[in-house]
Image (cartoon, rainbow, N blue to C red; front, side, top):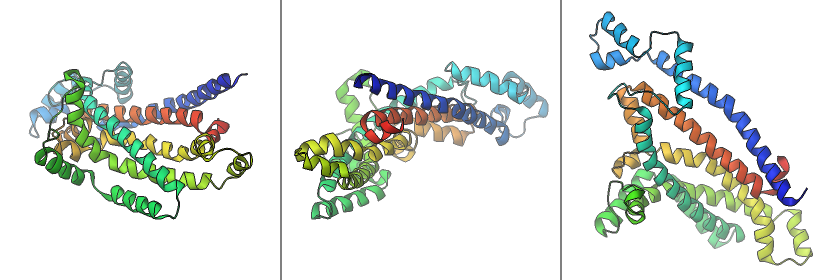
Amino acid sequence: MTRLHQSLWRSARTLGRSVAVFVPVFLVATFVTFALRALSGLSPARLQLGEQATPQAIAAIESQWGLDRPFLSQYAAWLGGVLHGDFGTSWVNGADVATLIGLGLGVSLSVAALALVIGVVGGLVLGTVAGLKPTSRVDRAVTGLTTVLSVLPGFVVGIILVAVLAVGLGWFPSAGYAPITSGVGPWLAHITLPALALSLDVVADVARQLRTGLVTAYRENYVTGAVVRGLGSRRILTRHVYRNAVGPALAVLGLKFPSLVGAAVVTEWIFGLQGFGRFANDSAQAGDVPAVQGVLVVSIVLVVTFNLIVNVLLGRITPASARGV
């Protein structure tokens, strides 16, 4: 079997194992998500008619929504709709939940993707600089910088960015969102500041993990062997050390990207973005159960999908991961 075939086989096995884990996790998570409505005691009738609604009026509206059927029958119908991209109808405004989620998700994915790129690039640069010169002044400076970046709240950074780069210098718009269909320039201009505000924690985590990985990798026997064989320092770094050291840094991204998409409510408020996190927050406060259920399902899919991508990348890039597959 050629090296290419072996690599493809390892990737296929990694993908297959991840999918095998995804199916039961998805079913359990969706069941728990759907059960939240029954446990919450919320009803569309109470949202529409108020607390003074009569039992007869409540029963009539719940019958229209199919809430008078057995729980498992409701779950089966809801899950079937979810598998076809139908998350139901909002209790608050009667709009299609999938459409509402799609509008907010497009905004948040744009910001999160750019934040991830900034975070990965910045983290790799800082982590490499620190890892190649451990215990030096440069290493201590990078360690101090990443510590500061990791504790800075995103909303504080966002306010500073708006005050300096948007209001003060006028380089970027202070709020709003422009879809990519309006042009790459306006799209990037509107998502750059919120992406910068969200990327600092990613920069810090990637830099710390990579720095630790590089220091550990340089102590391994295979590096000593490479030096004895006369390999150059650059080749040792790129062909041996980096491939083993980058694993923990990549693993961090498995949890970072979904959190960037869904946990940026305050940042979205600061920059006037109608994103996924803000939609989730508004839906929860309004008691819009179908919208909250749809948000949870999409969040589950995002977490599992991105971790699946990271696992495949780890299997392709890092030798240790490949041997474990």
